[in-house]
Length: 230
Image 1 (cartoon, rainbow, N blue to C red):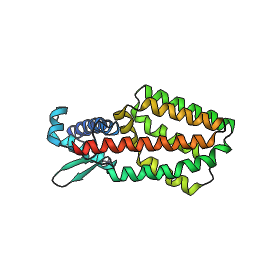
Image 2 (spheres, helix red, strand yellow):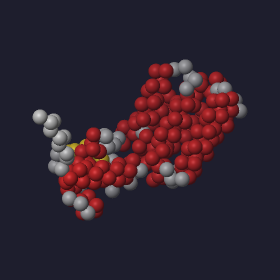
Image 3 (tube, rainbow, N blue to C red):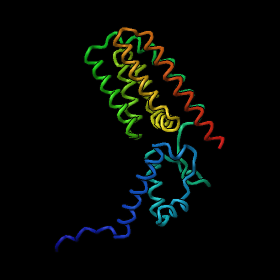
Image 4 (cartoon, rainbow, N blue to C red):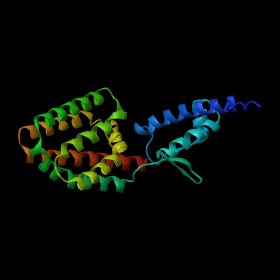
């Protein structure tokens, strides 16, 4: 007796999966780009009307976003964009201000010429992404830059903590840059920090790094407070 042919998914189910994936991707970009702020409820009926589809693929898309940690399904509210609270943002940036500058003072004297070239290349890549409006890359490149600055500090436990903090503020950093228009300032300060390190002016580089982080934190907290007050 020949083996039974494999069951094929129904065409409607395939169509729903394709549509839901497209919707999930569109909503993911809005969330990551800061167009939809944390705490905002994504209403299925409004999204179905906007995309011109039924609520079934919308529901499937929201479940995909929940699995990715971008939304939370809250009783009586539906899908709510997840994110850090104002207090958590303040805490993260205060910790970074305390941890990163001293580690730079340990790391920078150990930079080789190759390290400096790599940092310069990274700042150029970051600047190009800022200028091109490639928001999805801003957080990743910013994280790499800060970690590469500190890589020779010889403090693996502290670096692990900082890596986690940078990961936590990946999306908020993109929001801060896009909402505040600070892209030119961020690019310029990254370049200046590398130049100061190369010139051996390590204390000045650490001071600029401290001010750089503090400004980003203050700006982001203000954005969050305005969003919550709206």
